[in-house]
View 1: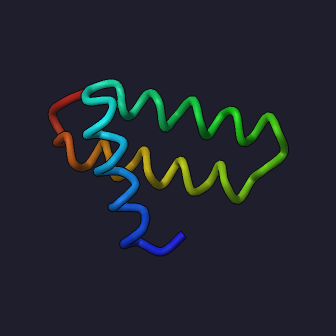
View 2 (view 1 turned 120 degrees about the vertical axis):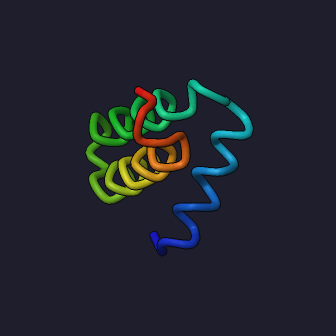
Length: 60
């Protein structure tokens, strides 16, 4: 997934789920891994990292 697409997905997920967006991305990554879809799981991990960065370094 291209960096611009990662950012767009992260913003959309954050608008939809708010503070729970990072957890949602993590869950989707785990689900993809469980289904053997490693590339999709990697994309969700990138989206999760982007959400974390958007939220700021001092938030968990």
